[in-house]
Image 1 (cartoon, rainbow, N blue to C red):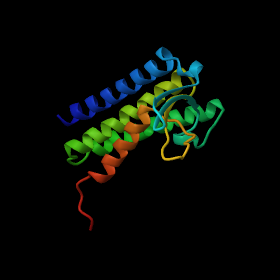
Image 2: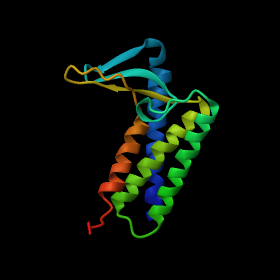
Image 3: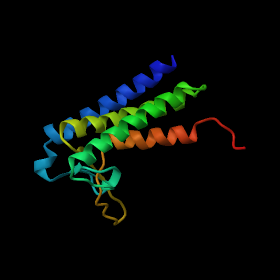
Image 4: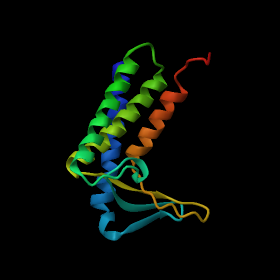
Length: 157
């Protein structure tokens, strides 16, 4: 049961991420349209090519940087699987781990296919113009990591 919950959470996170990227980047053609206002000023689709990690940190134009980030993502996925296979993680931890893994693999596939991660979500508010873009995988990675940290069920000593 535990392995299935982890697998299906990762599978759906991966699939939702890849479908969202395909629809916005290829079908809606945001790369050529520049931007698409969805819920202005809060949500705009804006094309981005991320060769680094979240928010463009550690941008690397080299092929070595791309492969290092792919390897790092795969190692993190493996560590999460091993960690969750030990002990008795809660249902929510398994779902969180699956979201993190599915999101990370979604970005790995982008790096393998395109050489970078496709980003398209931009959120701004209250007169603050956010220059950064991200994708659905990033949401899953952040939410999954938060679930693993906050829902581990261990009492502080």
